[in-house]
Image (cartoon, rainbow, N blue to C red; front, side, top):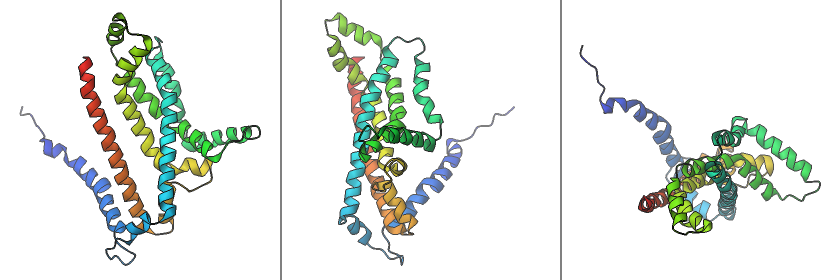
Length: 265
């Protein structure tokens, strides 16, 4: 019986169609509206208007600030948790990890609404600032995205590295900073990328916790809601380029770290 084989080019047709319809075509449309006016004529006015607008630049800076603070807080909380789960000797570490992942199964709106109600009750005794509420909401939402890659990286670190360092007289702090931390950099980079990029555009948390639209995602939405596709598309394109740059930087950092990490093997 003659066997039937499919060529790689044939197997790639569904992927090419998906990529063309849902990635390339939308990008072409966004680029078209970003550099045209309401009459469909080519213009750079949208670009110059963005970089000369104090409100637009302020929104970009505020979005970066929210993303940076959220990422740092998530990293400071997630690393000890992931380290304890991975290296604590728990027989059911995967079960404990699942407890941190389970809140993601609940509807996002319900979780943020519940957190808002808790903070509202506490505000009678504690003076919560709207920015702090926003960071709490972002951290609560994105913390599992930081824990999971850190745990996957830490659990794969060979214990013989730390044992060898201890046998050679290294202190516990030196073992952590000289061996464990460098080997866990790929997990840190993955977690930072998974938290930082969506935190810049997740305006739902701000709208629910802060009742504000002062973030890039909501700014884009306000333009599209007002049927101003030109400025909305331009800001979307700027944000996309910024995210590509950040992804490229983190990717280069991961590649260089993997090369360095090979020296431990």
